[in-house]
Image 1 (spheres, rainbow, N blue to C red):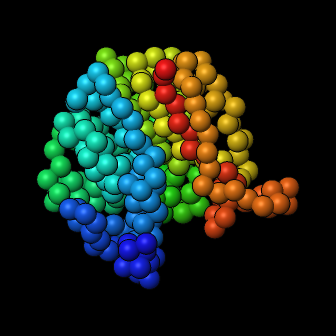
Image 2 (image 1 turned 180 degrees about the vertical axis):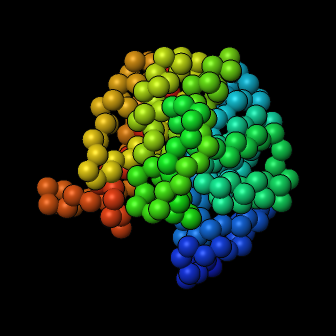
Length: 246
């Protein structure tokens, strides 16, 4: 509530300097920052235990301005993190934020997470909703194949995938390379005019032996006539899928 009072009236989609706790950040949209703070630091979406390692390996696909990275480093100061961010402007802010706050042990990959390394057409939205389905003018951005990064690690303690609609194709490409992932978070997106594909995503979880929990931040009333995600003209469903191994 303090952050909402402090930054809630700031103009949307305008670069702002914010602070919370011991951190100072530059963010491209203050309201998106407040929402990220609630999910990550208040609700602790990404809280997990690593009983075997004090220096867990974390792959953060869709790191945005670094809120999730800061949280992971709070949990495990010695964690080795690979942070992927496709939007060039946002990845620059991510690097600056981590450097300013003296966060070490993070490899930033300023490329889109995808099923190949040939690049992907990507629409920039300037905050946290840039995607391959964006209605903004698209540009070709460099990409990496997540499968290659998964195969390079012997164990991945936490894999976070929040890549605004690309998750279905990426998970399908990686479906045989998740056996050494201990915890998997996927933010699932469904875009109007496109196949939803939720069953395909859940099948990947089940094939790889994950127990899972599904939640949403938007419980719509009258869903048979109210088909769109609130405040979004291109999306009709967003889900948070949490997977872990017993």
